[in-house]
Length: 391
Image 1 (cartoon, helix red, strand yellow):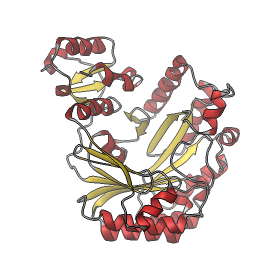
Image 2: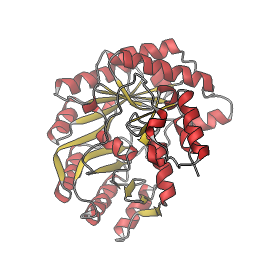
Image 3: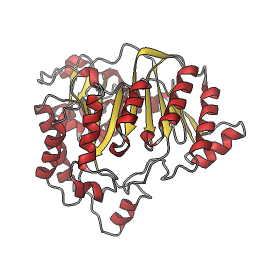
C-alpha cells in the first residue's frame, strides 16, 4: 500500500478537518412545492399546491412506515421545492410528526431551505418556534435584473429584508445560496455580488455555477444557441475569484461550492453525504443511504401519493454497492472536500503510485496524516480525480 511518508508535502494549507466522531444519521425531507418553477431548476418540484393536502397525508404514512429503520438523528434538512412555501400549520404538522416518530439529539442541526418572499415576520417567528436553528436562503443575486433573468420572484430589497428579519429573530446560523456564470456576467459584477453578500456576514455561503439541466427552459435555450455556458477557462476564473474573496474575508472553503465562517458552521447534514454517513430521505425523489445500500423514491408527487395510499412503498429503486463502487465514491466525494480521503483507498500499484505522485507535483493534491487532500487547484478538477484511481 502507498505510504504517506513517500509523499511528504509541507504545503501551508490548514490541516483537514477531522471526520465527525459521531456517526449519527441525517434525515432529509423533500417538500416538492414552489410558487413558481425557476428556468434553471432540475429538482423534483411542482409550481402548484393542488396536491399539498394529499401529499401531506401520504408523507405522514411514509414517516410511520419508516420508524425504527434508523436510530438516532442529529441533523434534519427540509429541502425541496420550497419548504417555506407551506403555511405555518403544515410546517408544524410536519415537525410534530417527525419529532414524535424519530429520535433527534438535543444539539441537532435543523435546517430549512427558504425563499426571501416567504419570510414574513410571522413565518420567521414560526420557524424559530418550531425549533429550526439553521436557515438556508436562496438569494442567488442582489441584482434585480439578474433575479428576473433567473425567474426568481423576490427582489434584492426583499432579500435584504428577509436576512434582516432572520437576524432580528435571533437566528445565528444563516446560509446564503448564490449563482454565478450568468449571461454577460463579468468577474467584476460577480465580485460586487459577493461583497454585497458579505455585508450581511452570513455564517455559510454556497456559490454554484449556473448549470443547464436537461428538461429545463434554460437547457432548451442552450440547445437553440440562445444561452451559452461558460468556457472552461472562464469557469476557472470565476471559481478562483470566489475562493480568493471569501478566504480574504475569513471563510473556510471546506467543499467545492461551500464556505463557512468557522468549523461550527459547516453543514453537518451535507457532510453526511460526503462522508458516507447513513441518511434517510423522505418524500418524492428523496434518496437514502445505509451501509452499502442506496435507494430512492419515485419522483412524481402523484405517484408517490398513490403508492402510499395503497399501503405500498414509494421506493422506486434500490442499489447494493460493491466494495469497488464504495471505494470510488469515497474518493470522488472526498475530492470535493478539504477532508480529502484515506490514502489506503488508492490501490498499491505502480500506475496509481505514479498518478498520485504526478498529481502532487502538479499541485492538485497533497498528502498529510495519511489523507489525500485536494488543493484549491484540485477542487477545480474534483470530478476527474476519482477516475485517476479507478482499477
